[in-house]
Structures are given as C-alpha cells and as structure tokens.
Image (cartoon, rainbow, N blue to C red; front, top):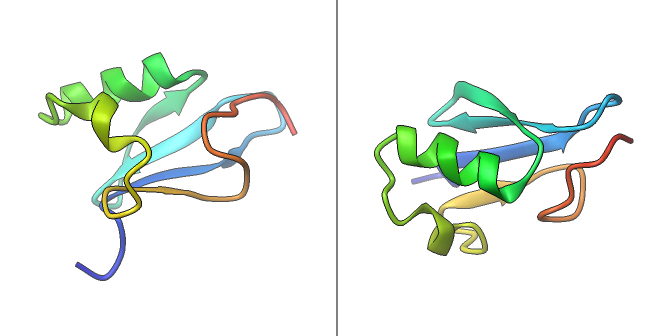
Length: 70
C-alpha cells in the first residue's frame, strides 16, 4: 500500500472535511462521529480504533480531529 486507504481532507471554508476511502468520496464529516459512521458504512467495523493509525488514515491540511471552517 503506497498511502493510507482513508484520507480526511483539509477543512472546507464552511466547515467539515471531505473523506475518501480508497479514492472514493464517502462524505463530508463534521465530527469524528461522522467519520466513524462513514467508515462503518464502508465495512470498517472497528473504525474508531483506526482514526489515529497513519497506516489507515491520513489527515491532510489541518490538525487531526478538527472539523471547523478555515
């Protein structure tokens, strides 16, 4: 694997972060709870434990777990 399969992109100007799983957009997260739900729907049942694992999740353009507007 060249990069993490889950990418949480930079916060948007209106708040929230686009989330991609294996290069497919799965939603716009406004919280860790949203992110966990998107990953659960992508069949990653233990999603909460993956959020801080860089092998699984890459946080781009902002601090991890922050979703506010830029």
